[in-house]
Image (cartoon, rainbow over all chains, first blue to last red; front, side, top):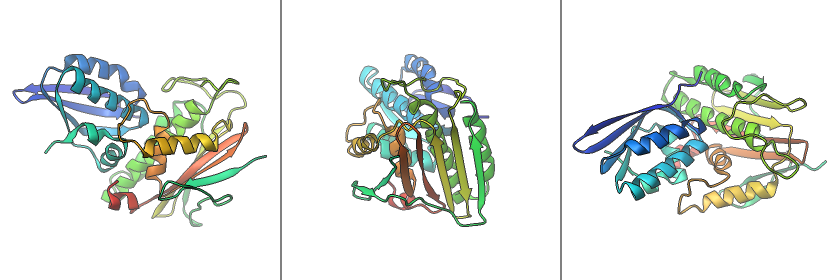
Length: 103
Length: 191
């Protein structure tokens, strides 16, 4: 069975750290709407360490979410914890054009 | 009957390679699944995960890519291929559905230790070569990543697969697939 998607937000003085669990695909869309409402930090780190698979629908959701966070929340977005496959995916689909790699 | 096989070359041009379909060596591990519902996707990907997970870093990487490609192949066959007579999709992406009477979707894979062949067939034949060409060229020249750009799944398959083919028998069948290598060129190029 595919692991179910969920996210956790950890807030500190630097901003919001968001950890994703499971797959990001068409079933994740509603969760991202909730996620957007809960973001308050001016620096947002998206942590994919526990993410399994991101398909093309998941990429569309991520692109839309990152654009909204930057445009409407005026927050900087960074990415961390992506595996080799998701790193390639982010590079070829333009995710890295919108969000920097967090080091 | 009209069959056309083609692939994109390194420079983004369409190359007709009619009749050329990748094969894996005799004696390799092979498996074929007949899809009966959308629920099968998770089950099949779970089996692939068990096959490749935890062996070593390169095998893990192959397994990750295989799971992604199978996800895209089955999403395409389950939700993009079925269309009504006006060309409108019959099913929303992500919806649960059973295979229709007379509909057939099958997935095949074969692994010889270094190359993993993946192929999917659907009994719709609704994809056109022009659409494939359009989807690939649109995503290749992507300098402003649009969130809702069409054809991204096909583009992802083409980018990850070391060889990518599409066979279309209009109104009858679409077959697509390719080969993932244990040591892929895409990782070396960092694309």
